[in-house]
Image: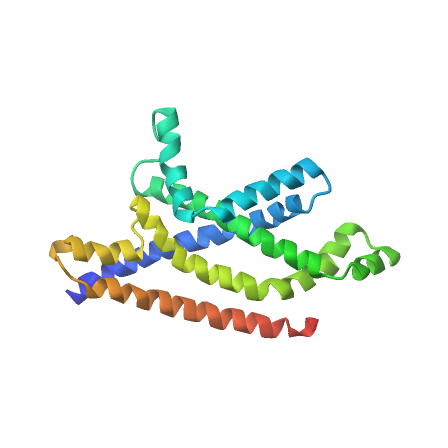
Length: 222
């Protein structure tokens, strides 16, 4: 029994890790692009971007996931998502990337705007281009400032992946809950559901240590 449960939970957690990794790969660069839009001097673009960020941050991720997965099919007559697990994963990944890109964008914006303007002016005096100033002056200091809030959001992302079970994506909690409903010939088992917490605790513990190490490495910016 234990081997069956462990195997199912491990497979579910691999799906959780896959969704986590894809979300980070998409949301980290997209969030930076969105932050540029939020700080744009072109007023229509700035207000459009900030409105989108406001809507995404102000509504539940679960609702966004349901809308992205079900509404296109309702409007177009047939679902645009591939059938089966791959379609559910693709819809979940898009919803998570959009959601976390908006959260990351606000962290980026705060980090960029916290760098003293005088340093950018000094770079201009030294003959540096705006591109050089951003990558060699602003960006490095921004990274130091955003590590703590980014680490919190990333750890939250690990736990938020469980929301994907609302569209039957077979992540780790879905796998644990299946044994309560009668999966793999077992019914009424509650301990696998609680055991899923161990996966989250171990992975988040590793992330906490990693981000602590990164913060120490960036102490030279003080």
